[in-house]
Image 1 (cartoon, rainbow, N blue to C red):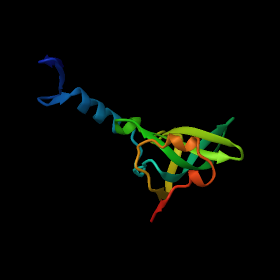
Image 2 (image 1 turned 120 degrees about the vertical axis):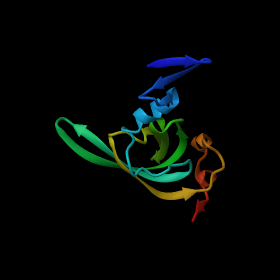
Image 3 (image 1 turned 90 degrees about the vertical axis):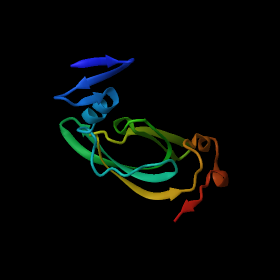
Image 4 (image 1 turned 90 degrees about the horizontal axis):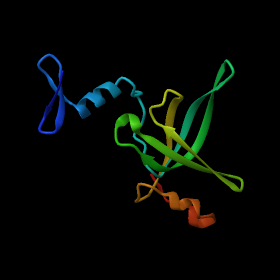
Length: 134
């Protein structure tokens, strides 16, 4: 049963009141992958992604730098990763709790003071270096 009290919606389950945000969190909890690390901007990560080719599956590894992390709820968390390959910069966006990702390993952590380090796209050579945190 859904009831509106002073502009907020509440859902009643057997004498238990649940807000919309609590209900969404409870529903999303079944889709959250266990064992995923807390990933922040400035980390070098290795992502193991499942690739389907026809009726075969294989795991492909990507070793990238996290330049942005986004998403409010646990299930919405995404990371934008970047790698320079030759003369080109390649970026990919991964949903952390996607079933297409087998695992994520953190290799290194660099010192950054921002949530998004997209400015690193324009830097080359020594200017693009980051200081590693041990």
